[in-house]
Length: 186
Image 1: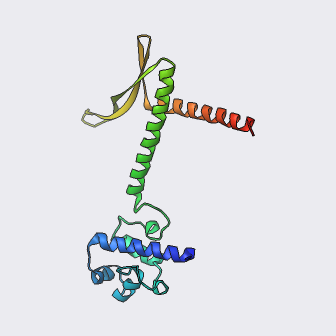
Image 2: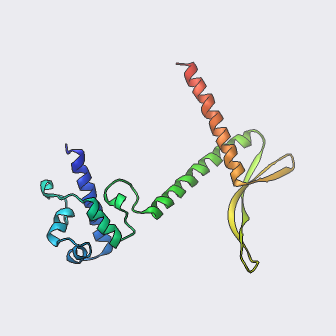
Image 3: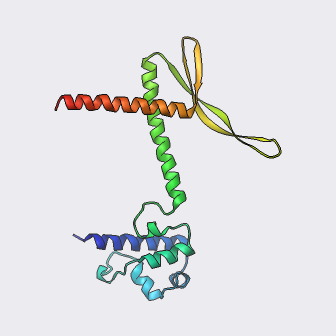
């Protein structure tokens, strides 16, 4: 079994190799760009790790990671050092947005099921919210999702922030009640 430091070295090496592969540069050109000798690049990011003597594997240091990140800004120092899973802030932001949308969809589905049991109908709709008024008076709108809640011939459009607040209240209440049930039986 390899120790953690060996795993970190391998992760860093693989990530440096990924940058090298993504750029499509020759190894000498890449080495020149980050100001290291090609022979040093060979032990930082070998062409193949399989069969490579891992005792010879050099560690991608913060200095090397900084050089790479300055020349190739779409790769962060933190990612190159194996500290984060996303290559850059944009990638992290996109993943976070996707996760929030997924969680929001799950909560909306649950809230929809509860509403249905209570006799309400929930329908998603696109609304256009005013984002800004330009100096020339032009209004700039952005599309957003809202929920139309209806029952007994009455309906109301529920803004996203109000829906999120309701979802949070329901989530906390369900968590509270489930915790009570679990604790009651233990």
